[in-house]
Structure formats: C-alpha cells, structure tokens
Image (tube, rainbow, N blue to C red; front, side, top):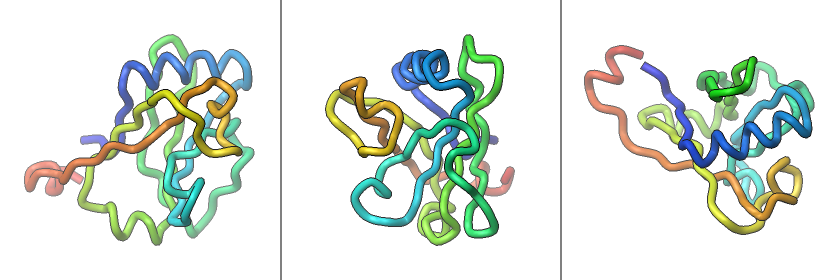
Length: 121
C-alpha cells in the first residue's frame, strides 16, 4: 500500500523535468501560498530532516531513479488518513517549483484511506 501516487500527466512533466534538472524530489509543507502545493526540486536541493515525513517514492516510467515525496510532520498530522495523488494542471504554480516555467503546476488530489488501507500501513 502506497500513500502517494501520480497521474500519467504528472509523469510526463516529471520526465521532462528530469532531463532538464537531473534527479528530482517533492516536498509538501504546511505553510500557506507555495506551501499549499507540492513543490518539485532537484533531489537534495530542499533539505529534509526530523521535521519531515517520507510519504513514498514515485516510480516514473522512463526515469531511472524514483522521486521521493516528503511532507512536513505538521502537515502529515492533518493528512495521515489520506491517499495523495500528484497531478498537474495548466497555470502558473509556485515560484520555486521546477515546473513553474512550463506553464503548468503540480497539485495534490486526496481521498480518505479505507479501513483496509489504513491497516496495511
């Protein structure tokens, strides 16, 4: 059971970003503004630590390494009962996220985990 997934549309953008920027990572903070969207960075550019939770790793078809998805502990407390899907939509997103110049932005779609999924985690 995975806590995080991505749409095929998000995978297409991630493949392009991987070619341009190398290995990637996501971080979802609990802040406002840019923190309300998943931010995509070159792997290691955003420092994670004890105040972050690794939700999972996305296996992007056509990309050698997986893309880790991190979330701040405080945000995870609100979202711990949800399954998250990273999607992409047209429009300008956060200024620091790699997809911003592409004319698209990543976003999170969520649903409650079932009792069976919660038990598996």
